[in-house]
Image 1 (cartoon, helix red, strand yellow):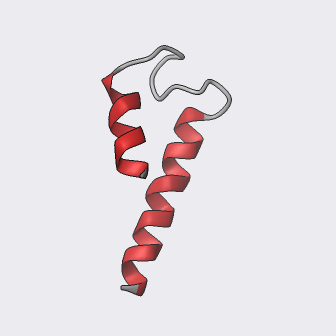
Image 2 (spheres, rainbow, N blue to C red):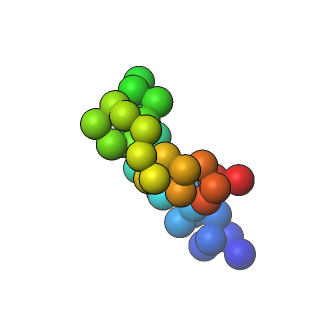
Length: 42
């Protein structure tokens, strides 16, 4: 279980870097990647 928390933290940190200040995953526009990232972060 502890290993899962570490992997989740790595994935969320990477996603946070991708999004940055733009609020979107890809090229500052809404795409299916945003919806997918939202659902996976719940």
